[in-house]
Image 1: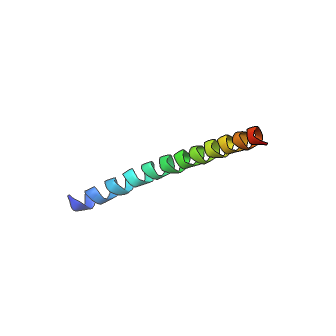
Image 2 (image 1 turned 45 degrees about the vertical axis):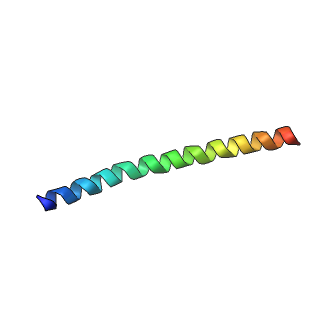
Image 3 (image 1 turned 60 degrees about the vertical axis):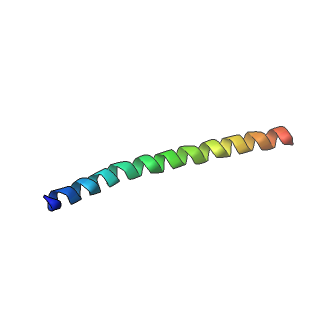
Amino acid sequence: MPQQAVPKGIGQSECFLPQLTALSKVVVKTFDFISSCFINIVI
């Protein structure tokens, strides 16, 4: 039983990590877009 539980946890981590990476990339792109627009408005 414990041997089966470990691969499931690893599988969930493998599925969760790409989503987290993609989400962080979207947040960074959004932040860069907002900051660039804000700089253009100020200048």
